[in-house]
Image 1 (cartoon, rainbow, N blue to C red):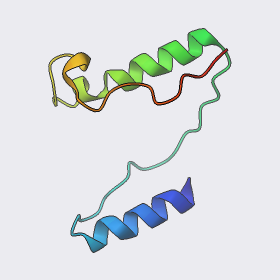
Image 2: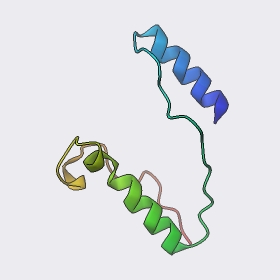
Image 3: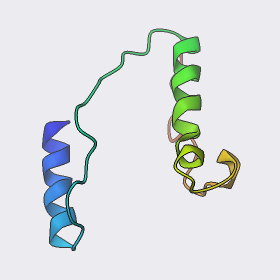
Image 4: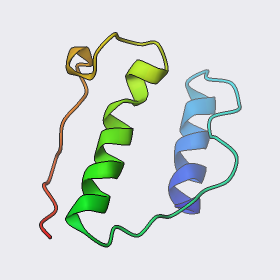
Length: 71
């Protein structure tokens, strides 16, 4: 994660985006069950609503699962 943040942070600076790029701290959560996966997915799905970027998560154009994790 640190390597990804470093590379992306440098690129963001190069194209003109000023710091801070990242939220302080990092918490890696292990998904242990389908219920845990569903809870975390719902939290992520609601992020643009909480940020005021849309009224409902369905309105956010960048939503959706890329690869469904099977439990």
